[in-house]
Image (cartoon, rainbow, N blue to C red):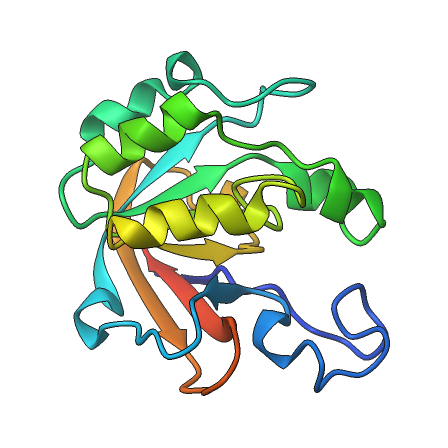
Amino acid sequence: MLIDLSLRLAENNLFTRGSPVAHLGHLGTHLDTAPGEVFPLERCIGPACLIDVSSVRGRTIEPADMDEARIVEPGDFVVLRTGWLAEAYPSDRYLREHPELSESSLSLLVSRRAGVIGVDAPGLGRPERHGEVDRHLARHGIFVVENLANLEAVGRRRFRIYCFPLALEGTSGLPARVVAELA
């Protein structure tokens, strides 16, 4: 069974207000990149694991909240289910008040050698830390996919994932179609 984990875009939703061209790379479900950075095709399809941190609110997500991180294998696409998209999208607070990972949680995922980290929120760090977190992970070869949807339908800890970002140039984000395959 295949489950589409991509946020559907509609005219005048949270991500298409104003000029769509100005935000093209960051529409809906997307992969954050540095300009000129290329998402390796080898990472488009592969093993994934789900870590449910949806019970965390009002504080940063700590390693103790991510007990499932012990199942992360090198190169895995790690999917963090915060429940934030279902709770707050499409309100403006979705962009500002989302759960974020602590420095020690980021270090844990780096030490487990995750290949990609996906989340059902607009980032792994709130706006004031967003770029810093993305750059830190990029230095370790880890890409970030934001605004995943339908994670409650995955219902298991390990599965196969397909992530196909658009081949855009000159933007810091690549809209992507992300699909989970359940055996």
